[in-house]
Length: 128
Image (cartoon, rainbow, N blue to C red):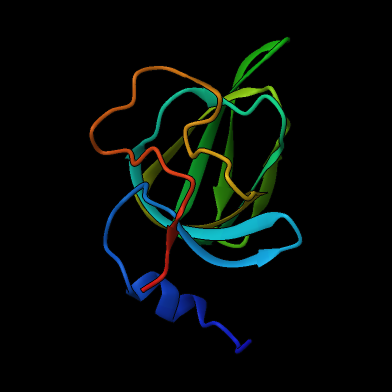
């Protein structure tokens, strides 16, 4: 095992909303993605989803029992969407994120609206 440069990992692809698996920690993937514009409303029934903003700014719409709200994550911020909470990421500017999810977790969750063409419904792609 050798150190992995996140800058090099992010420079290795251009696709938006198409996460790459950088490494694994126990049964979790560490994924990086380039994002801009809207993702889609979706939920992960059995797992939380951790976001770290490496560059840019990420907004996450949340549909919670108390109603809808949006959290704004500037560069360097982290946020965890609890399992079962419907959410919709949105990046108003080109943004780079790091996500922790159990290996095999689909990027559009277990429950989701129609997947637009610009979103890659994947369990993550290998780097390279």
